[in-house]
Image (cartoon, rainbow, N blue to C red; front, side):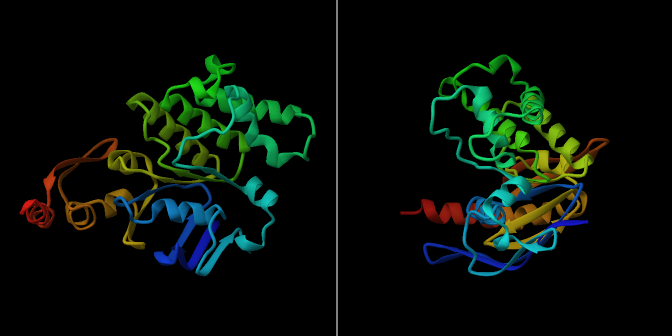
Length: 270
């Protein structure tokens, strides 16, 4: 079942085209990695899919309905979004911030329900935050704050989770734990789209990867079918050793591609 689909999606920022005719379909029950170099348009795409940016052309369809026609409250119940920027405007404790994820599910000023409490407790436990419930978020480390904001999105209990660099700043154990959470969500029928700079996380945990470069999708498919040395040289400008083990692909960058190395030498010349 298609959870979300775009057709010829175009987005511009400050009059500058960023996304050019993006066609994609996200299926219920899959964990998709959005990858590509800096400036490829990954954050812009995620924000557009979350309904946070105006589109210049094309459509975004959520479960057969144009996203633009969904009221903000209905959209927030269907789509959870984790931004790349990790900022909290108020000095709240961890539990209160995670509880903000429940606001789309009740009327303004309505008291917390048993369902709200269960969702908050589950999100805190999932992100290993039980011991930080009463801590102020402005006194947390960057990695701890990242986990709090992910927990807030989990508490939202939406069928589609969009996460912009959710693994950035997490130590290796918490990165793997997060990938496990995303896989479990997909296994339960949810849809997860996460932008990832760590190619090994994308290669080993995602059902599918979407490769974005220059505002366009240049490849999509299973990691084993897409992530090869030729694509990494073309998109990222790197040489890489690509191997496999029982857990999936192993990608080891070994240097700049010939084209990137030549460009770097040219920039160094007086």
